[in-house]
Image (cartoon, rainbow, N blue to C red):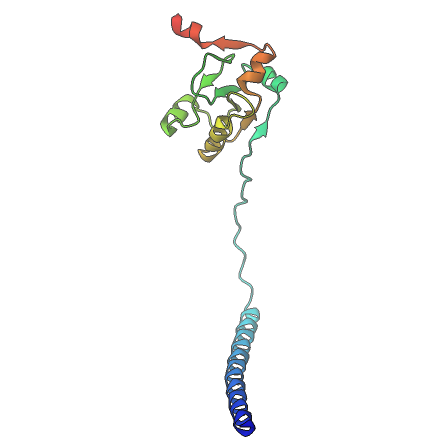
Length: 168
């Protein structure tokens, strides 16, 4: 019985060596081909490098404080991402985060103008959603005011009462 086991193990060992030997030979041949190709490539004269246009960094969304926003009233475009509300930052336009692209382009014609987006409060995601959409649509000077209308009114900053506007 031991003799049969020894012969069986020998046969298996020979088969494994044959398989590995074939794989090693194929690997050696592939390495030789790759080395030859690399040598041929480096022997060629260098082609003139094409001048590539420098990529501009993607616009980023900056954060604004309550005082920075107040100082920019009348200078920057203030956008309320809630879409509507009873009160808004003085001079703000309403543009909901889910507004159609056409509406965005109608209300925000200058893609390089400074635009400050806000919504209800720090916990409201609408302003960042809209800010990211604006970047995606090619607007380049986008800022975010996280405090929103809640912080704005708590600090008695100037507002527009939209109910009064609709009565007039």
